[in-house]
Length: 138
Image (cartoon, rainbow, N blue to C red):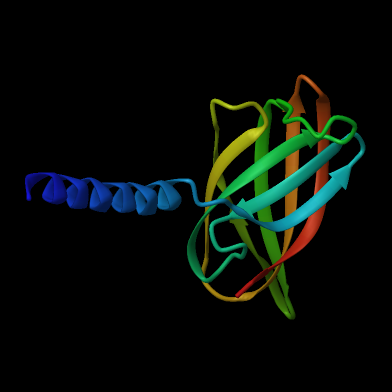
């Protein structure tokens, strides 16, 4: 009887570990990808989209030729949404470099939905650059 209980408990622990492992290793989904000269910039999040309110995301930089992550130094991400007859709505992200090269954790908040023009700038080991692309906020 004891071996059966031990086996059952061990089985349950393996199943729980599997669920926890899946939750921790949830893969980020791309929101947008943009090529700029020798770099590919990818904006990622858990849901693959930005929504009203606070959003967390990852910004990745990789070399076009090798597809390997690359350190670009200091990075900024800002958004704006043109408003007819008004000043554009502007939002800036808070970014922090991860330990892995070319990856930056970010947060940004949006008061409402609509398409944002995203500007990403960088300055560092690969030089200075910027790119722009559109991202819908749902």
